[in-house]
Length: 440
Ligand SMILES: Cc1cc2nc3c(=O)[nH]c(=O)nc-3n(C[C@H](O)[C@H](O)[C@H](O)COP(=O)(O)OP(=O)(O)OC[C@H]3O[C@@H](n4cnc5c(N)ncnc54)[C@H](O)[C@@H]3O)c2cc1C
Image 1 (cartoon, rainbow, N blue to C red):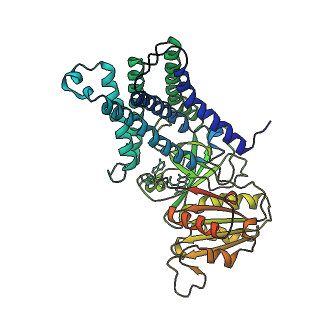
Image 2: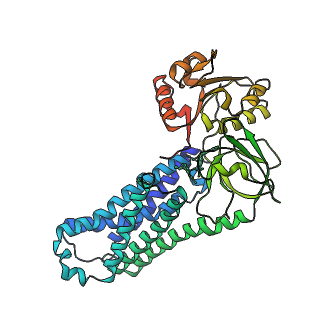
Image 3: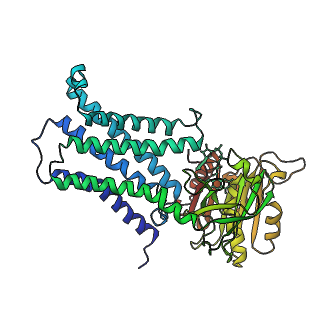
């Protein structure tokens, strides 16, 4: 039986809660020591809960397609971020409460004689604090994304292993061997997830490389990487989805870069294209990738895709956010789908409109309307100017607005403004889909 996205989402939520709550409830059954004061017990509960939540982060970030599909990658990322902050808060609150009710723990004599497990607790908490600081202030700390990512993974592993050693070593609630086994089993599961992501999955990708067939220059400091599967059939994707690209390293590298597929999903030869704008270290080197270079693609991912019944598709793109829209338009053209498509495309100036010529050509194959909204229009421009707004929507769309299906991709400020405008036009949230290129 095929589960709907919503049902699958609910099932995974229940599994998630089970993984977090079951080990905690297990502590309450069987034999346990005599109860201590409320605050001490609360602080211990915080420690256990924080650790269980942290361990499961390896599952959230493992890119299991079946798990992430119902929500979309950006929602999972935000959930990971919020849950991690909550878990860190619980882990840090654990010693603070403990020291508040038992200040003698801070006495120099006690600290000198503290058991080894207390040292592991310190290592774990220091790592958790470093994790939070580097995640929240990466840009202010001037850390490159790649360095931050590596440090993030190392700190997470240290925080969890040291936390588990502290917990099992203290053993207050783990007198029963089966409880110790349960928590050790959980740890093995978390580490197993990490091994899957960092070793097993890259091994699969190593056996399914791609070759660069062409690097095509596009308007707007942008290049399209055309890739073909190297002795394997490749994968099918839905228009609007994205993949993780590794160009200069092996699939074992910690960091891959996410890019939407810009080609038609109807291509049958496994060829796939990504259109990449020069925005930093990695993207500025795309134009130097030689034809024939071996690259690795992990995908497809994401829930930002057409497929729901809709009378009309309204695609709202800002800058390079046009890439998933291009895949949707090319796919609809290949499927000879004649339902109306309106592309509202915000760009700085006329010369940097990526895909401009092809969009004009595609109008002949589709019922496609393209509305360029230029923030720096040339002299004599009679089209839309400024930023995409509800007024522009109303000038180019037919009411009732809630009947159309909306897709939004662009800079965060633009996306926030569009989502607000759609709300004001009484378009329900179920009718619009967003893909955020920046998770901050
Ligand atoms: C789902 C998704 C789809 C995307 N599709 C496209 C596309 O089709 N075309 C396109 O040009 N861009 C796309 N991007 C943006 C693209 O991934 C970043 O611009 C690129 O990774 C920046 O790398 P850099 O080293 O050149 O820049 P940097 O200067 O190193 O990074 C700029 C910013 O990009 C983010 N970033 C950098 N590396 C990564 C990474 N490995 N994973 C996640 N975020 C990162 C960070 O917030 C960073 O501050 C997409 C992003 C996402 C999340």
